[in-house]
Length: 346
Image 1 (cartoon, helix red, strand yellow):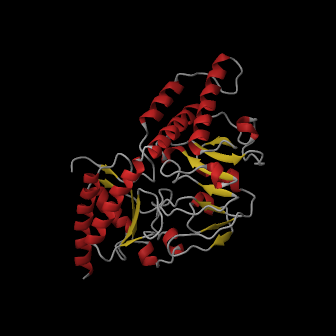
Image 2 (cartoon, helix red, strand yellow):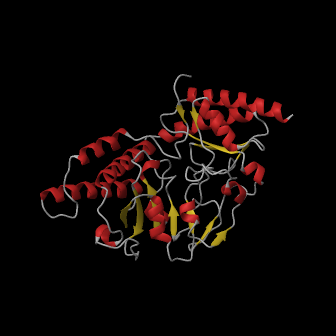
Image 3 (tube, one colour):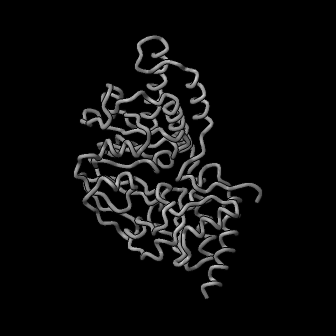
């Protein structure tokens, strides 16, 4: 197949045309959104429009949207100084703040109460969690824009979001805070973002974030991700037919419609990533924030897999632009490399 095939949507989704158009328009607005003159009010209008788009798309009418530089900053704002428990399947930006650990089941499920921080959807396996009512902090980064996720009906106190996971720009995120909940600013200086995050807002990035969230919600309503799930499921059937000893982590549990975490024990994940890259396919060996480090997946170890298996996993994550032909072409190349691996191991 000519050209490269991008199969790493969970790391970063391609920029949506709606986000690009909104960002280009925002670039022509000169004012500072904190200024009271006409130019400043024009910039403020862009920020507030995006805030409204995000609240609508995320079902967060009873919440405040605090714009940040990304989900990592939002996690620090939500978690610093709090004694919350989390699982070892959490993203590093949450995991680093939690001293107490929750037990993870073999299927990736987590038993949690309200005094915890958990992911709505795991970035490596795609496993979806049952969110307990009143949960302190929920990482919605991977699930928002792929499956229905309404902040108000989950009963969560705070949620984390990131623009580039749903087709917005990198460098824009949000902390969603239940209205009336006190959150102490981590950056001091001005009264920006309702006094919760000092610093001039990233008007261009925020404009793209709002437009992407609105477009992503339309995709969910139009059943686009059900079509993605059909392609993902067909890929998994093909892969397991070629490699009966392969493991798909979390397969028995409800998952994101686009994610496959595949492991062949002994065939190292980074080796597979390099082989696929040379063949023109972009996949990863886990979360993008840690996939450059040569180590076994903490997520898979938490699910009970041994180090050999946890070091042998790759993640294939697709999106609405991914075609059946592309994933089957990937399967052909992966299957050929699998046969070579098995021949060498014999």
